[in-house]
Structure formats: C-alpha cells, structure tokens
Amino acid sequence: QLQLQESGPGLVKPSETLSLTCTVSGGSISGSSYYWAWIRQAPGKGLEWIGSIYYSGDTYYNPSLKSRVTISVDTSKNQFSLKLNSVTAADTAVYYCARHFGYGSGQFDPWGQGTLVTVSS
Amino acid sequence: QSVLTQPPSASGTPGQRVTISCSGSSSNIGSNYVYWSQQLPGTAPKLLIYKNNQRPSGVPDRFSGSKSGTSASLAISGLRSEDEAHYYCATWDDSLRGVVFGGGTKLTVL
Image (cartoon, rainbow over all chains, first blue to last red; front, side, top):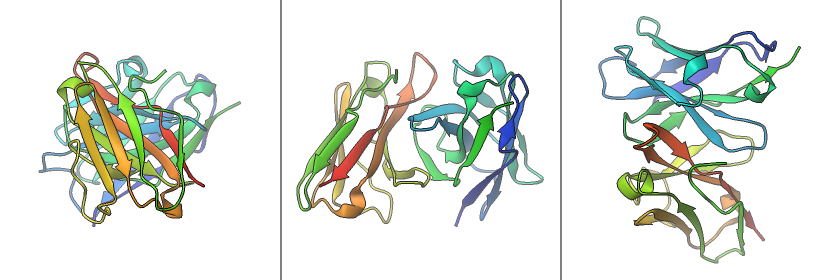
C-alpha cells in the first residue's frame, strides 16, 4: 500500500527558505506514469496546489507561486522535496504531499498526513 | 478567492440526501474532469470521486458525482453522522495550466 510522509522544520523565519521532504513507501517514485505533488492548506482555509514533479525531473508549478518554488526528486531515496523561498506569515500552512495523476488531472491519491509549517520570528 | 465556487456550508439530517455544487468556467470544469475529496476533522483529504463520477475502491455508493457544462455536483444519500466533513472539488485549468480547487464546503449532519 502506497504511503507518503512529509518531514521538515515546523518553524521558519520570515524571508528564509521553507524546505520539506516527502518520503514514499510501498511503491517506487520512478518508472511509473504518476507525478508527485505538494499541496498546502492555510489555517482554516481551503486547499492550494503548489506544484508537481515527474521522476525524470519534469516540473510544473502554480503560477502564483512559481517565482518562489522549487520541487526536486531523489529517486535513489524515493523522495521528493519542496523549497519555498522568501517566506512570509502568509505561507503558514499545513503542507501535504500526494501522488498526482499527471498533467491535466486534478486527481491526488493518496495524501500524506501533512505537516504544519509556521512562519514566525 | 478560489477559481472554483462552492457553497461554504451545507447541512442535512441523518438519512437525508444532500448535494454540494461546484461552479467553474469553460477553461476548467467545462473541459476537464472533476474530482472530489473529503477531509474529516483533523485529517488529510481523501479522494472521494474521480473523473466526474467514478468512486475509488472502498468509497460507499452513497456518494455520487455528476457534471454538466461548467458545473459539477457531489451528492450524498442516506446521510450519516460520519459524513460530517469538508468537501473539496478540484479540476485542471487549461488557462492557468495547473490544478484548481474549490474553497470547500463544510457539511454538518444535524
């Protein structure tokens, strides 16, 4: 059974870079037709797609975040990562990783449990 | 402001049938599949409906999805207390070249 688990610092200072990693177990990131995605949810708010990556490194991002986001993949560790730079309090959110059924799809399944990242000095 | 529009809340009594709407445009719902997720309190979202009206294995047939033009709906029949959750619609947007979500609907079982 495929499982995803987010990890990383729970507190980031304003103007610094938020870094998270998603570890995939029960299946391989590479050699399949799936993408791997980051999605976030600000406290009490709805869901926002951040971006997705293919095992080959092909990426696409939410245009509203594109200038600050980098998603990378490490197939040897079966992990993919998120970097969001120049963070502000508005980036405080629960960050989820999920398997994404590809460009043109809005299907995410399964999701990780999520990790809360607070931006504060 | 979300690209897809959902009512912020919905409610029903046990056994009742409720529907949740999701409105978009020609660049998103009008030309792509719609997906629905359920988020129980304090948990991660879970896929409920894919490709407009398909249920993943394990999702009860009380849940059904439909799409017409630039709008979609999620219907829940035989409402149960454990259905109390937030429900989100999602789709691809051809203009934005990315995934868009609705703002979510909080379902209360009275």
